[in-house]
Picture 1 (cartoon, helix red, strand yellow):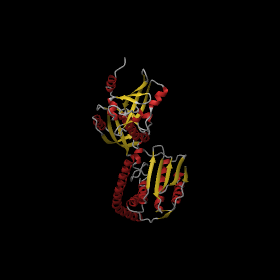
Picture 2 (cartoon, one colour; picture 1 turned 180 degrees about the vertical axis):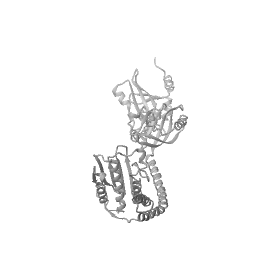
Picture 3 (cartoon, rainbow, N blue to C red; picture 1 turned 45 degrees about the vertical axis):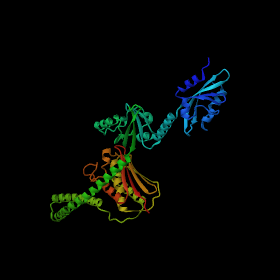
Picture 4 (cartoon, helix red, strand yellow; picture 1 turned 90 degrees about the vertical axis):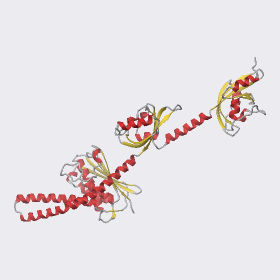
Length: 469
């Protein structure tokens, strides 16, 4: 029994998708209300309308393929053009139906434009997140990491496989209080965005400072299903801030040192004069011995005062063309002949042709000798002692790196090595002013001096100077 045409139209009209009945040669016999609404078609075709005429020029043409292959059912993706010029992406479900006289195609077209747009938006978002220079991490509602981008791997030192499924506390530095994290969780679990600065630990143990923005990921029902954390690396900013604080502290110490030198210098000069008078008048051997001891200590204090003054006041030395390489080689030779350096092997590698620089030779020599003497003391007579000096240069700076294999410096002491009177040597073996004065000299020459070390790993000092013509 054949279904009446009007009944067939009613049946396809109640289907929400677009429906078409198409002959084997591609002519549309009828379509439903869904097709009329989406594509802007008339109630009935006024002239024979081919199905291919509804498609964009770049859209696939599935009907000839279906007819040629003879498949009863198939599926395809096409792009419709609407009456107002819009494009509709659709998935076709095609079925060949054999009639008494001829076969025809029953086509259901499902509009997937919205889902296609969502896929495109998701693709764009994923590409932006994946290739951004900012570290990104996404966690689920149980705070397990489900995604990290390459930038996050680079900054933390962890691989993706090591992070996925782990709690972010794997990178915790322990520097933040329980209250800090409680307030953060309270904020984001309520669906709010949280912003703050945190200190984490890289895989190698180095500190990692970032400015973190955590945004809740919310589903269609408004439920929080995860969290997106966007980091901005501020480690270099923190380092620069610490350098600024250090510089300001050193300047304050210089001012203080000038005052101390002035206040101590005058009474010390009086003591020295009295001791000299007594030495000329006293004949008792015991008294002369003690007076000589006082004189020695006065001279030692005078040297400390001179160092303080040298640091605190601008240099009066005249800048002159200086052969930096020769200054370094001479400093090595001076230290090499010392009694403590007999077991130390010195190696010097000049990797660049350094031009003449406008510097103060005596001051620069003092810097290198101070560093080398500290290196010799750190080696402490070990038979395999080694001090390597390397001279390199880039476009605008020359660097002299002096590296020893001595006992090294503890991490908690590294920030203090350029402070006055700080020393790890025994009482009476050092004043703690050598590196402090060297720091002041380098700053007066528009240069810099840095240190890298670890306990038992040796120490490396790097002196850098601008190449000026």
